[in-house]
Image (cartoon, rainbow, N blue to C red; front, side, top):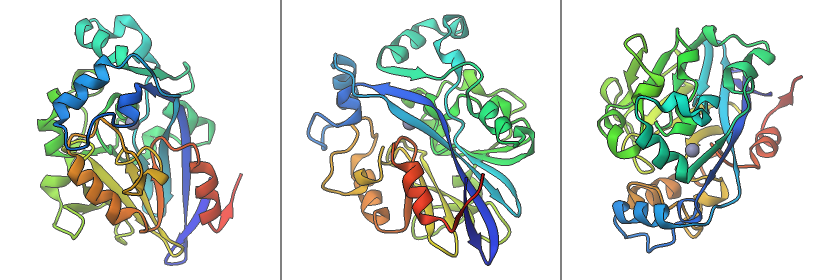
Length: 285
Ligand SMILES: [Zn+2]
């Protein structure tokens, strides 16, 4: 856990390791010209027989004076249980053929939080950077939280494999950044805290409804960027980027905007603990 300050008040940021994700090489790094339509890039991913090395899955827990906030819900161990796919086994077969998730029973986000003395029932808001399976797995474990996503993401659910039946029902408190927010230079945004230090911004690119979370501290701006780039180094416009982005042009524009904007914390970068540690003012526990 790392400590920052906002207007002199302590805010703690915790990167929680929620297993690993293994994807095809053409998914991790685009193997076709970036101008290729996304549907064709997806076909290339499905046809690729080679897998890239596993990547960590990070969720983030922010302890703010206004409450407890979480960015992304990580993966669920049930992903690997064929019985859990009974409502839609065909989709399960396709998705599990090109996205491998490793998360141990008892080691998903809610249990990791409990180990750290944090009760998922106390989470005020859970922001989904997008609705892929390695970001939504444990949403049902946060029954009292507002679940922030976008209407754009919901409208694209079928196209991006959002699998709503796996993680939401009538009791899930879904809220939409792009409906409730106001316009900013980066995109439509909602303030999650009264002091305005924590906000969620609709930043389409990786998926149509992707969200970036911004935490403005006295030390630096912290950007929870989801999968806009799998790593912080990947924010460099000259670096290769993922083949799965739905809108490559918008991804590249967002990467250029954020690359020097502060501390970048993507969802799958192995260097997250080191960079988070070097930017903070203190380490606890
Ligand atoms: Zn991901």
